[in-house]
Length: 211
Image 1 (cartoon, rainbow, N blue to C red):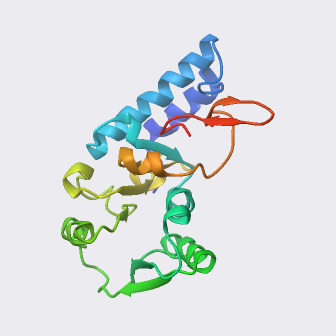
Image 2: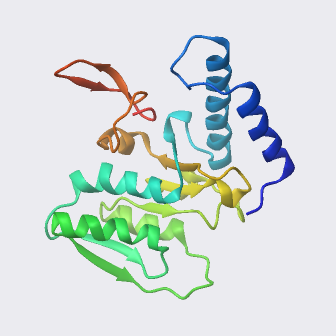
């Protein structure tokens, strides 16, 4: 989607007036950038009706959010002979990562046919899946801009979407995860903000959503 002027103005202001490391400094610019960053998390929480800002993880796009779930949650929890159920109408970004997991873990992909142009009954699918103990990831990239989203009502375990499709900046994605699911995930990418403490021999990871 094209960027509204208000978004362009906000980006310009951030780069020219408040640009600094987030959560990594004690000076004025770092505090201003951190406040803006965490305020964005609050806005996304309200947008999705998530229980807490701790449920909201920022990524670079939807693809990165899906890969984070695939590797952080799928890799340690999906084993040989397990089945990964996908809709036939998924974007490649929600197909290829699960092929990687299938190949490496010895799992099977199971395809659920669906006609394009329909509104998928997500809440009913989640109910059926949960009755069988199956976690559910919803790719909401197309729906987030067109309809209200209530992740608590949907009861999905993960929900992902991208910023540019809701008229936001490019290079930003959102991963919503239930608290217990995020806590079960292994860190996917190493870096500075994700750690609580690091020594030559030991790394202690931060709590979600920061790790």
